[in-house]
Amino acid sequence: MVRRESRRFRILRLEVDVSFPFPTIIGIFAAFIMIASYSLLGMPDIGLQFALPIGSIDPSSVGDLAAAIRIMMTHSIVVSTLNLFYVILLLVPLLMAFNFALGFSNGQIRMLVSYPIGRKRIIITKWGLIFILSSASVTLGALFGLAFFFPFTMDIAILGQLFIPLWINILLVTTSCLLMAVLFRSAPLTAVGGISLWLGTFVLFTMQSSSSFLLNVLFPFLSAINYLNPDFISPISFLGATSLSDVLLGCGAAFLLSVLLLCFSVFAFRRLEV
Amino acid sequence: MRLGHLWKSLFVLGITVIVISFIPSSIFQATDDLSSDYYRGHLIQCPEDPFLVVTETDGKSIALYVLTIVESARLMNGTPIEDVSTVFSLVNVSEWSGIAHLGAPGLYVVFVTAVNQSETSYCSIYVFRSVPQFRVLIAGMAFLVLAFAGYLFKSPRIPRLVMRHREGMMERKETGCETTAPS
Image (cartoon, rainbow over all chains, first blue to last red; front, side, top):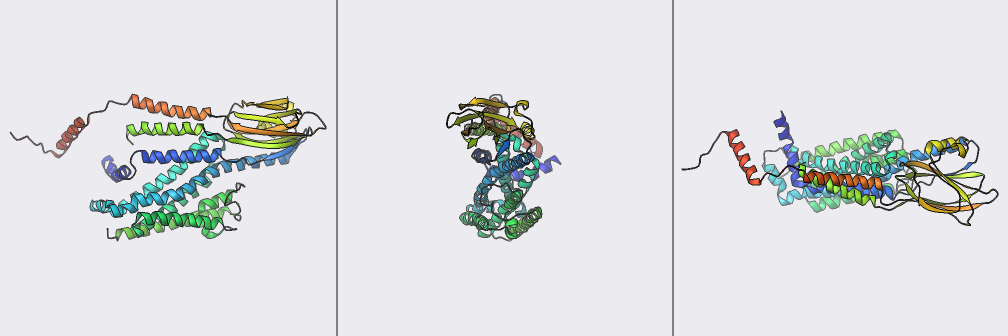
């Protein structure tokens, strides 16, 4: 049993050793921790100030304070993760280009398919590792930054509401870049195509004055931020109101779209002449 | 992950965290017009004891109190400032700078008021993080100590040739084909 399991994970270990030699993964983690910490420390204060008449009861001030505390907690988590999300939009197409698409031109894919390993297993291992690496980097980077600088702002409910859409969003970005890599079979095309597609749609949607269904599907993370409404100046703060059902619908649709794209990528890769 | 990689990873993390602890930044800054009729309150988040600079523009006396959230709520519910436990306070000062010892990281409210009645004061407050941030620095040092300890006390490396010989012996035992050297 143990032997069979070790065989199952042998390809994963091989992929880690070949595509991500030792300092790569810890280097990426360290970079994400630095970015999250810089974001948190450079975060402007939310500017809550109030005048409290001396010796009088002011229940509105208590309400304001409670609201400001919640805003501050949300703000800390949003600022750290949002800046890492920009990095992810650049990093995932590059990782997919240089760890998968480049394999078509340098013979790595040809060598892998010549071994008795299924093509489905090869593509899913490569895609899965990139997805796990990027989502784990964002999560660990943000959690490290928050734990070091604002341990009191780590609200599990807010973390869950932001991290789950974030992981689904990374899943969608990774899968779309995988499909590009399979179709183009070229590292520069995958890198340029993936970066311009995701950054382009990001800029396009954040220039809109209202929230749309397509925005919720392509960027469920942004709609989750919009739903939490941290009330701070950012490119997405002026979007229209987003309800919880919009976020859930967007997450579900993005997940389904990712699964569809993955199935299509596997289908295309199995019929590919390498 | 190989054990040698774990120590090196801890070393990289330690260096990262130590670099982070030296990032300077300001927490909060504001200029208020004050009166003795009310408190001006500001919500701030402090990871550690901050460096505080308070200046009254015309040299008039002001009072500054730093309160926890719970005590701030008590103050807002009408409890006089004398009955509220303050974390840090400055009374009758016109200019002050130094480290405010808050004790623990958290969310705090800074309340400022003028001391003399019928006089309006203008006060500037700057709150900076003290660098290096000792909690973060200690965490980084702990990572480095672990990394060095692991590196120093790791098991002695078996020479590669011996490893190869052992692997060859194991393989021959598994396959059952003992080869004999030609005589």
